[in-house]
Length: 481
Image 1: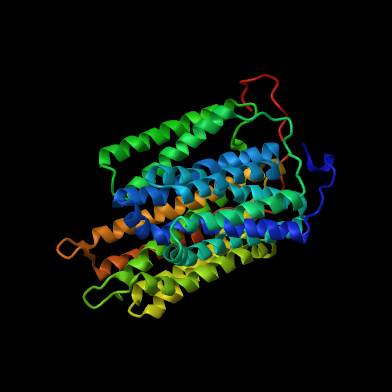
Image 2: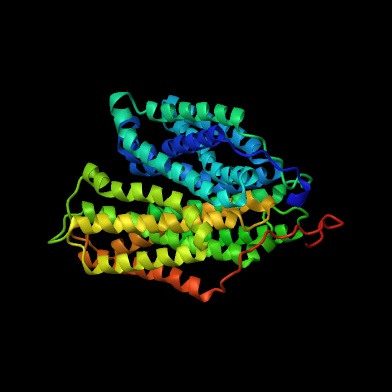
């Protein structure tokens, strides 16, 4: 159904925008509390390294699986309606994790909390429905920035809360803020009418896409933790390929597919996915390499920094990264996403090549982290904002959710590549990576960033893409679109 046939939606007022912003901030805090408190959780609950890794990665895996489902349901039933129900799941997960006496309930709480990642595409649906086109991209940047900023609040506050109260409260306190903000969103946010009102949900497509993402994310997490033998990794790769092939066949025959494959084939969409992947792979490599070099104490290199010192070194980059998320939406509207990505890729490549040549002072690492975090936030948010306003209004949720999942996958893949480079350059006698391993890692990161620049130049510069007209519904179930 075309937008022109719908009555004009009510505009968002400042209290509604503020409530949505506080919700994004609280969710970002709840998402990030585990990482800094993981050693404490392992001591308190008697967890080994593998169990600790399971706690750290459960939310990541479930978030990647549930986000496309949330986006699609938002397109079908309305962003506000699905968001409120999703927040009930997240709140239950936060309270369950806060009250958990041991690992099983803590993991279940993390599984439920993983639904919070789906809030991003639902928020994008709401701002597109209730804001004029000129303000939509800026609003998307603000939502992403607040979610990222909440992550900083959670990382900085988790240790203080756990030490002065208990680890249970680091889940409970942000969950209470989530509940309060959700109540304000429910009261202040106007409802949005679903664009694709008459469509049915393609449940076979939902199940197959979820299974494909689950297998893929589990494989990445296990590879990152070094717990997957080569034969098992190959079997999992085959499983992912089979599931993806079956999913594509089902989507091609579905009347109302989970993901319109024609949308994925449009340059605006597949280029955004590929560029997002390259940018976030680079970010993942930087995220792993810099703390490792700060912590290592090698022969004439490294800084022997403890956890607190590393956090202080990386804090400027985290702050600037959150700020760049807010700027990314505005930059996308003014210059176009491709120009923003090209500038970010050039800055990142130059920074990492310079770091490969010179990395003997801590300020160089701090500056590199700050510049690359700003570039990554600028580029990924510009791509999100540009895509959200380029696709058909009825595809806003699913299109942006696929980009959100791509961001998660890219960071995990980048960390895996960087970890493999360090492992290849580790001395078996000292178990310490050689300086050359870090130099190689920085250089490979620069090359990866430069690939993004080359991709922008190689692909055809698209004119401002307009939302596609919805295709007429097939006459009969099972016909190909």
